Image (tube, rainbow, N blue to C red; front, side, top):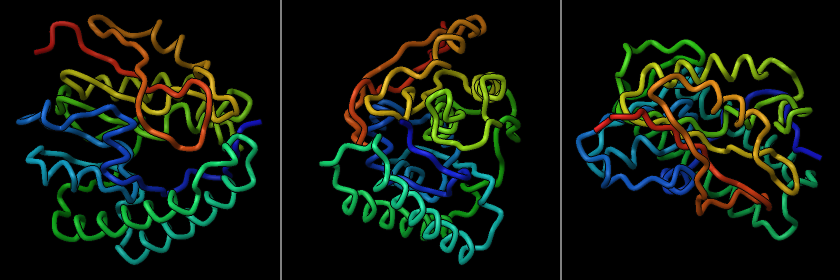
Length: 239
């Protein structure tokens, strides 16, 4: 049985967690421009900036005032932790308390960074982003595609609005604005055991020329067991 959520939660990850689940070494992207979509109340942009890498995040909630963002994050964190604690998809030995603490730490880093660098946090959402073609070298999309697919398809969403057609439109937009790579995590179901998400195959089959893609293991642990890769897409001929 998959975990279940009633809405898309405003739920952030620490920059260090994001680097793990995207299998990303920022040293490889010196001088590059990175997009985190959706960024949520996460600290990847702040971590990237401290490493000298230019990064921007988008999220539909970023138009809200800071106090509302914090309130929404804390409410959604409580909801998500309750659902995770009740879910048979999460391993019994997973440290949920430490997991929750890391989300609150990410929230504080996010709020501080957004206050200092508001231009790096833009209100926008897939499948229509306000960027020109090829605006970024690397586009990252964590915990939206695949994760919020309908529960019948291995996602966590009670509703069916993020179906395969939506995924195809969202991925086309991510590819449009990337010059070199797109990385998506998770590429697995929210079940126990986790398996490759059923949308992966049709999305790979529909990649436009010159894009190609493959699944890649990561060192990230979100409490699932089974096959838990990310999906890495590369533009052929990119520098």
